[in-house]
Amino acid sequence: MDTQGIDQMLSLLRASTAQATGRVSEAQGGEEKGVDFAQVLQNSISQVNQTQQKAETMAANFAAGDSTANLHEVMISLQKANISFQEMVQVRNKLVTAYHDVMNMSV
Image 1: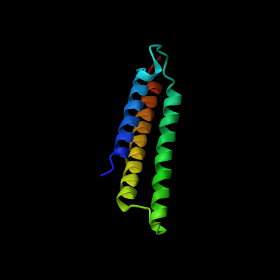
Image 2: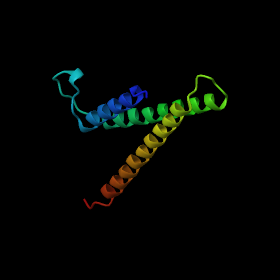
Image 3: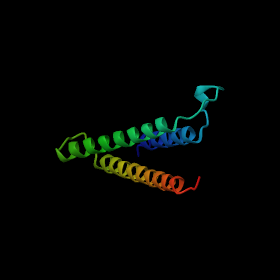
Image 4: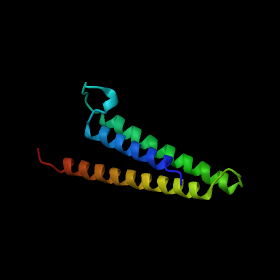
C-alpha cells in the first residue's frame, strides 16, 4: 500500500493547522510574525482547487483507458477532493455565521 500520499496529506494538514493557529514552524526559526488570515484562506482554497483538479485529471485518464491509471489511486484521490471540498464548505459556513453574529452586535 502506498502511504506516501497519506503522509503528504497529513503533513499538509498539520502545516495548515500550525499556520491557522499562528504557531511558527520549526523551519521558520525563532522570529514570530502575525498570521495573515486572507493569505491562509487563499492558500487553503488553492490547495482544495489543486486537489480537485488532480482528482479530475486522474479520473479522466482512467476513463480514457490510460494503462498507468490505478483505480484505487483514482478513488482515493476523488475521496480526498470530496473531503477537502466539504471541509472548505464548513469553513465558509462558520465564516458566514461569524459575520452574521458580528453584524447583529449592538455597538
